[in-house]
Length: 296
Image (cartoon, rainbow, N blue to C red; front, side, top):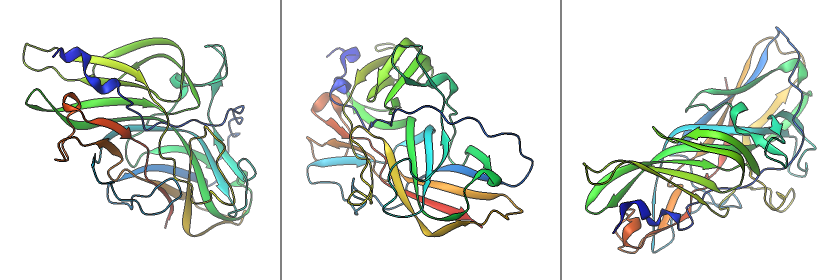
């Protein structure tokens, strides 16, 4: 079987779309205390479904926890309560968009890509509306991670670049070692997979594809639903997050995302080994929950 025709093109996904709005102006210079958001990928955090309920891996499926390299967000909103509709909370951040590819799209070149535990955005606390906030909403736009797989008797590791924004303008992007020229808009679900070389027989190669959306946790689905085609992941603070307007020190919020077995496939051999050449088909790569944590 030709290695370059891996059946990764069978619905590799874990993608979801974002709301199409204009970017929020950058905050003015402020030397006072800041609200700082860090991205966390937690392999041990509870795995939930689209409704925020605990979710196990279905019978006949396999799953693994990807090794995340980087992640990007396009939108952060603080919501006071369960009935706060999308955009009616404090929209702390809305990333840069462009029409370079025709329709409005996230500008991939302007996205900040961060690793686990790194700062994705900060804003002066003086520019945050005082009040109590019970929920955070975050739109994930891009994910880059490694997953293990088996092919032709080899145990290998491949790298996936997954574009999960509603629409993303990409000039070019690097998956792991190889750069892919795009120069166009890509709708939610575009992905590129870099497979490693196997000796001198099969060179490293990149396979591109387009996939449908998958799990987007929203525990507020009944009172504050996410519009169709939205990628906003919603999570509840363990205790309400309060902004008084009189803060004198920085506040850090860890946006903790569950990546617990977030890479899921139909497991033909029932051995929990991802074997795309032997009939395994990817069915879900969506993040599995969000818990915003105020760091003391």
